[in-house]
Length: 209
Image (cartoon, rainbow, N blue to C red; front, side, top):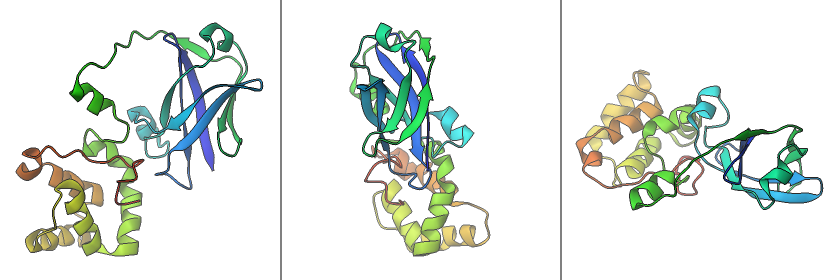
């Protein structure tokens, strides 16, 4: 089922909101914003927002910030519709969208560009809402398969026997959940010494979907 909302028109010429499909949480929804019969913005709802994660909106990776093809003054105050672009199904309709002032500065460094990449996580904490998804993976594939995948995902190497034994006990005794295990691996000296970037749930490289 599709869920979503048009939040605000941004003074710099963008429109913000969120959308997700509760039956396909790791698949980013391609959205279209229409005013009358005209499409004024379109793109993927695949940005992370902590407030959406905490509110239980999908996995939290379902926000969008789209550049408007129409002048801001023509959009503000108009009836706008948020649609799933491929099917044309309406997700939300807004008759009085808010205007938000934004003094966002351009991204200038490689680090800033990396942090802004919606397919890369900044920390395991951003996977908090993925616990049920990871538990489904364990039920389908088994604990050892999950741990092997977790090691490959976080550390980029096969799991060692000691790690498999340790984290299997944690899962069996419910002393660590799947996200907790990913966090433990990411807190290791091995990971901190690396320069690995971890794929977000909306990325095709996310191995637990």
